[in-house]
Amino acid sequence: MTHFITPEFPVQHGGAERIEFGIKATRQVLQAFAGAAGNVGWVRLSILGGALLSLAYGLMDSVEEGHLLAIWMVACAALVAVLAFFAPAAGKAGNHLKRRVDA
Image (cartoon, rainbow, N blue to C red; front, side):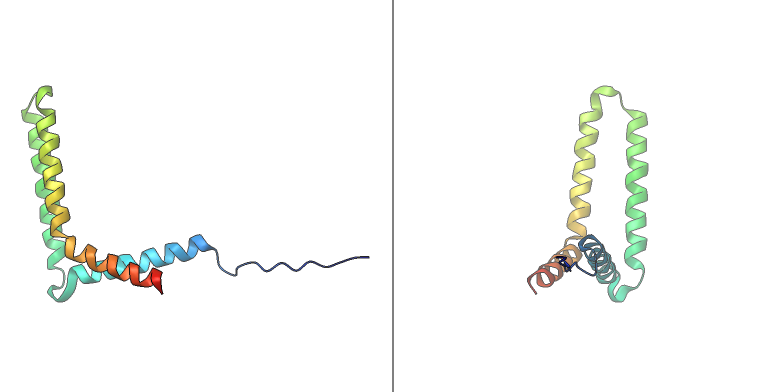
């Protein structure tokens, strides 16, 4: 006697759903970052990134091997400053993500 098995599989892959959600959350963070000021945030970010890169390049060219710890300390301090700068947008994205997961 033959029995037919018809298992139910999800229509969409769970990983694809997470990627789509991540892309939407990233877009919302970028929109919150731009806000009413338009592209001023991107200009600010570009200026900050260029300044940090030129500063790091100048420091690496001017110091000896023994001063690399100081350079890493400065780089970490700069990273903390950048994270503090973007904290409001990241907080909004986190709250949105939490609401989305809880729903």
